[in-house]
Image (cartoon, rainbow, N blue to C red; front, side):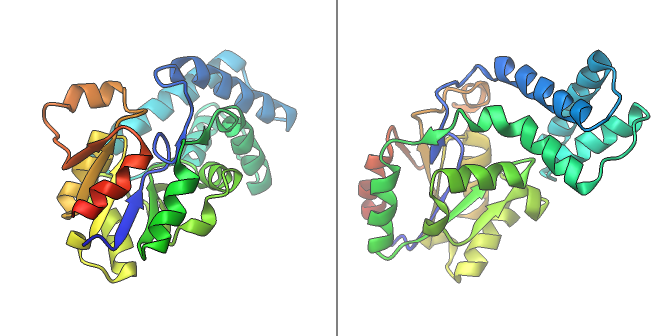
Length: 246
């Protein structure tokens, strides 16, 4: 019997409709970050800053894919400024810059169809609900969660940028199950990424459901014959029947 359901956030509870187009979105984000820093008095060469920030972020991302130790955008920004000889930011200036960096991407996210029908249904059935989200900025994710009016459905909400580890590390799943006091066999992970969500759940001993609606991602295509989910659904509306079968 399933007593706990853990959800991924992006491309699971929320979607953008711009899958595969982040290469067009990230340059806008980088420019918005630079504009915020310059407006706050940082004297930066635009081309040098954007190139160094992009390179450092890419290096951080490659490393966290290997060791599952989460890096943060704040760390990348501080590293970049230091390498360029710029003064460090105050906490207020840093928060303002990071919010500017994520503002455009945040405007693109929408609640996944069916989410407001599914969550009350699962809660009414007695299921505990949680979110585990891989993210390099907690403020970004909390704004998305609150903008979509999702916070009240979930306890706990675990963000990799706070936990210091990321999916597919089993420990981040253990944080939820230990808090619930439930064994892995009574819990399920629902997400769009085969490596982070499905493989992570399998390593932690959870049931796992792959939501394919927004899962056309290069990383998924690369591993679709290697990582086999226990169940696969195209819409959130299909989830209750899958859980009932277990």
